[in-house]
Length: 467
Image (cartoon, rainbow, N blue to C red; front, side):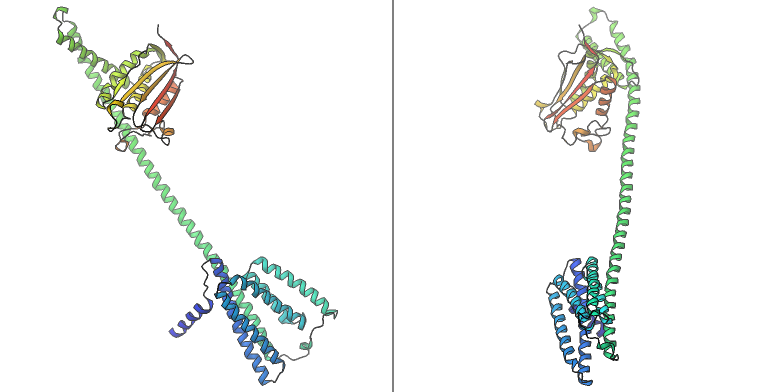
């Protein structure tokens, strides 16, 4: 058993195994190897049959048949060696053409009525379809049909004489062997055709299974990504809840500080002017500064507001008192506008919020490696068209890249240094854009250069200059 398996493996590697690496060339080479091996086997059997006919039946026609079969066998062996040398395509066309010529020769010599002629034409058509293309098989079929029609007409009219002596001769064993050989070759070609169809279907099923697996993997990735987004959204929501809780605590703290501060101020006012000294004057200034800070903080924490005409300079002073400590901690200098005597119609609390957000954003743009000479935030106000003011906030911080610039006004997007540690919520600039466009019917423009700084320009409508 092992010896037979080893012999078959050796035969496959020597006679049938393709040498080409390309799938199409490998398929053609394997089919050719199988066909040629089958024809070589049939030719050997034919050679044996011709030899028997020559020596046993003393048939002189056997010499011609023996020579033709030997030449055909030699051609098959040469073709097989040519395939192993990498000429499978050329041998394919030569092989199909020779089959067609052999069938045509049979028709011309023995007439179109010979059964072997029809079988030979059928074999050539099937081989052309399998070995070349379906179109090639169709072309061969059309050509053979025309050839049989023309040849049959010429033979019937005796313009092309044919040997029809085979009709009166009795059938012998060699005729049965011939039929069996032709049917064997046709069966071999049909097996090859079905084998290639089955392999194509198997590849299609494998491709379909791969697509299903890829779809399942994609669904898993989508589910995982959705869960990640949900977790990220939950974290942001929890941060907002913590900020809301902090705002409530801050509002209570401001309220609790305001009453003692007011009492201390009233007590200081009871001192007589003669009792004022330098120490009391300093205490009074500090209390006034603390009172301004609390007023500004209360405006920031207040949840309701009214639409009115307000003094821009007064609101800016409250904002500066609120962000001054942030600027000092960051070692940033604030430069105030020289002229801010403007009246603006709108929500003063939202105006204070948008200015403070811009200032805090500018302060936080400075990284520790930036020198102290550059750590300046400038705020400027000037007249704009359509009875408005143009408010600009300019810093010399880390700047914003071109990729980040289109996204800075999106909610929860932040590019501040340390954002990985939740130093920025990403809602400040989104609120600024909302206040400017919806509450003040204005516009917002930003220009930035990485490592050089950023400038925000805010146009607010509905302002007039104070006299």
